[in-house]
Amino acid sequence: MEEINIDFHIHSRYSGGTSQDMSIPRIAEEAYKKGLNVVGTGDATHPRWLKHLERNLNGDGIYSTNISKTRFIVSTEVEDRDRVHHLILFPDLESAHSFRDAIRPYSANIDSDGRPHLSLSGEDIAGIANDHGCLIGPCHAFTPWTSLYKSFDSLKQCYGANTKHVTFLELGLSADTDMADRIAELQDLTFMSNSDAHSPWPYRLGREFNRLSVEEVSFDEIRMAVERKSGRRFVLNVGLNPREGKYHETACTRCYLKFRPEDAKKLGRRCPECGGVIKKGVRERISELASWKEPRYPPHRPPYIHIIPLAEVIGMALGIKTLRGRVQIEWEEMVEKFGNEIQVLIDASIDSLIKYDQKIGSIIKAFREDKILYDSGGGGRYGKPLYNRSIKERFYDLSQRSLSDFQS
Ligand SMILES: [Zn+2]
Ligand SMILES: [Zn+2]
Image 1 (cartoon, helix red, strand yellow):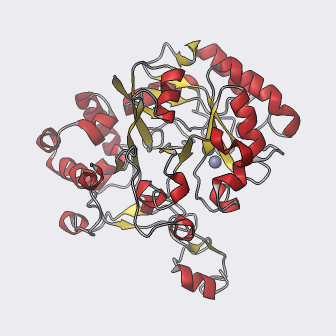
Image 2 (cartoon, protein in one colour):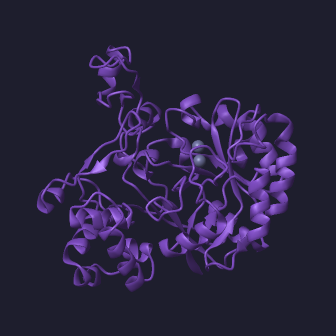
């Protein structure tokens, strides 16, 4: 068995609000430096992106380029009639074409938007995906705009008779395993942590990723890992602390003031400070859905490591906010020395990191041990690890859980 790092969910330059740099050569180059073995192509129902994929990718199933060793799995995100987003993984480019043909009559923007809106239900889409040999699951399942649990209270309400075809759930930047494993109906699903990146830079691409244990890199092996068959499985979820997510706390979408759920209700979800709308946070939504007060990990659940991109770690160490200039130079040097960014963040020994740079090493150690303090996000504004505290204060133990708590 080998272990591979995969980010399944990104967008091409043909989705709204994305960087023009989202081309296959650029993604292949940056993903390799990040340490991703496989990246989702995203947007695989868009005609021009499909052409771009066919010009730039070689192989069948999992595709390679002549740019780097990072490979690609064909993927897309679609929005259903209830504005729920679904992630779809295709066995190959041909199945993306036939899936596109099947959904085309139900979409007005499939030729213009990389993430098309469909006038179909989640149940319909899961059925079509299954007919084409695809894997499907809900994206960023708890966010307050375009997610399964924004529109529904259960998987069944969304996917109906096709719920059995849903084998994974994407946690999204504002949630993690600790939160989602309070919901009984999710115990059998594999959790995914993906970046949903809109630009190729390593502080976006792979800012969340999954580590899978497989026999070789193929679509069938990845499918087996998602379905946890024959020993193939996800061995790690890695991503931001949910406190960093834009919709973690219940907060005002205009002035970002945060509210306790009971206060938000009393206020009729209107901000008394500025009159803006108070948006229900992921934490509050999960509490509503939760079957248990504390998470219950099914035996198959891998640990979840909270980390931030290396450029931000270096910025913290240097006390610099901009990720270019000195931070960029230091980043290049570290990636050169350790092989790739994921090696530095997850795999390199703390001793070797501290030997390389005392401050950077200590910060990464604190992340791995989950001892970082956060100012949580909400209302559409990202949270952040607290930069201005002294290192000592920042490592203050919030009685957060650490990696060893997961390992049974
Ligand atoms: Zn989405
Ligand atoms: Zn997306």
